[in-house]
Image: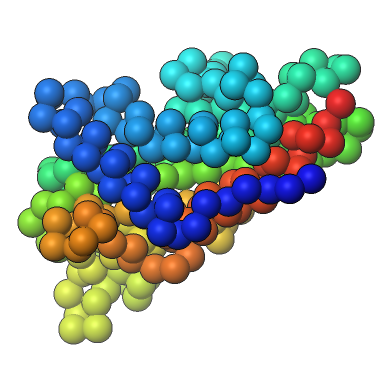
Length: 240
């Protein structure tokens, strides 16, 4: 089986298109549901190019059972029909933010952590990704686009009266890390904790020829795509 993964240059062009579509959607006043649709399409098309059937890629109504709640709707779901019913191969959350970071960042953190843990427990209980009595964890992905805004470099106030705050959230000069750094820490720890398989943090940047910049190698979109394709495609073609 031959797996296709685009080059970084090819993916850069697709990201540039996604950012253009993001700006168009934002310009029309869209706040949710469609702002990250172009990124969802990139992932869907790459999966199809690797032999995943279009009907096994669910976008928009990608609902899976929960543990602390009946169901949770993710942005994209990949499944495979087997002799015992549907097998869950992957789920992905796509998020974006432009401005008002200080008001929303804690909500996004709680949402990402809560959704990841809720799914982890639900999958352990319901065996959504089990094939042939073998429990195999699905790919769980998190993609975050941070729109270009002056608020990104602010850090707000960190108030903790009784205990010391994790040094990771304090910059070398002793002030709170800015929101960009805090989102980087979130993305890294979502993966380190085992709640997510991979995460990508994309920073829109009009000063870059690409229209964006990566904050670190382990969080770039290319690494995310490589991990996604590498995990899902082999399972898809060997699940019966």
